[in-house]
Amino acid sequence: MVTVRFAPSPTGYLHLGSARTALFNWLYARHTGGRFLLRIEDTDRTRSDPKFLEGILRDLRWLGIDWDGEPVYQSQRFALYRQEAEKLLAQGKAYMDGGAILFKVEKGRTIEYEDIVHGKISVATDEIKDQVLIKSDGSPSYNFACVVDDANLAITHILRGDDHISNTPKQILFYEALGLAPPRFGHMPLILGPDGSKLSKRHGGVSVEEYRKEGFLPEALVNHLILLGWFPGEEHEILAPEEAVRLFDIADLNAVQAKFDIQKLRWLNAEHIMRKKTEDLLPLIKEQLSAAGLDFAGLGGDHLLKLIDLYKVRMKTLREFVSLTECFFRDDFNVEEEGRKKYLDKAESKENIGLLADRLEALEEFTAAAIEEACRRLAEEKGLKPVSLIHPARMAVSGRTSGAGLFEMMELLGREKVLTRLRGASR
Image (tube, rainbow, N blue to C red):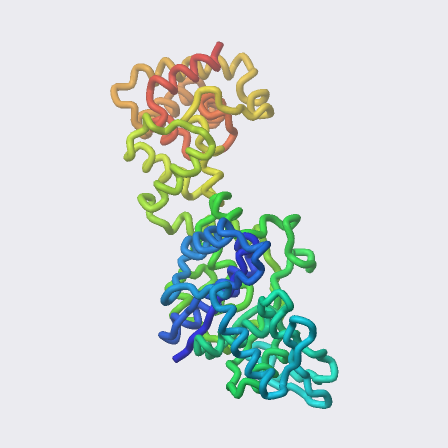
């Protein structure tokens, strides 16, 4: 059975590179009906922090990545690592150096393995110095703990970043010394920024948490991370996680470096927002409104659902909903200065807005259809193009030069609020 693992270190938040590693291991396990295990590499007692672990687990769950069984904690396995190191010590394959145990690297050999992503990789042992197994403080070295755990957990495949290529020949030496068959290794090129440099904060956020707070859907972030290492074809560019599980083929992992593109992510996010049921967006939108300090308690659930429906085709992130719909939640909304000068400062615009307010006040039903009819009839009577009324009215009720359909906006704002704003702008 295919058994893979993701092994985060709780010394920081889950960043995009680690999230992609977890994702591809999870895809492979779920595609093959195998197991996806979680191992917490918390041997660094000074830097490991429970708050980071809590954040990593939360972000994995948010991305839809589940794991089999309980997580394994390296901090609880020090006795096992020492036991395995002492076996090598007893066999003469290791030696003591102060309080540390070091592995003797045999010179004049070539370590060769078939990488799932890159093909054949060879490394001369002359380039590898003797390796620490157990440090003088009693903690295991990273490479040795990995081998002991991966063997103990029956890991069959290890998919990780290219930054681990230098570790693999050292780990293979440990497998040989312990009389174990190594798993298959695959190293994925690291994610780069758009300019080809190492991905960093200047290219946008680097932690999953930042994108969650910004209002990206997990499906969209997963979609983008998948495309930064595997491309199932243009017809599957917008990809749901369950579809990715069905289509995934480990043999098709890319060997070339991928560039993170925030604009592509925003486009994918907009696509996933449009495809998502409005009812499913409701709690996420409420989170964004609460975070922005906007009071939506007076809005009924149906009213907010209609508002989301009106704007879901216009958002690239959920956070954008806040600025796009500010006029629905507060009367002191921001007003675009250029729009105000262009559409509200002219005497003719003020007069027309006042006339429109009179027409809307007289409507029997304050519906989008009735509002539109009244607006177009007034424009016709005045010999104006409808936009000569629509643009000033939009500025008056929303403070913006663009947005959702004006008449639908007005219906949701309600007669009282619309009339108050139109009359205020007409003075």
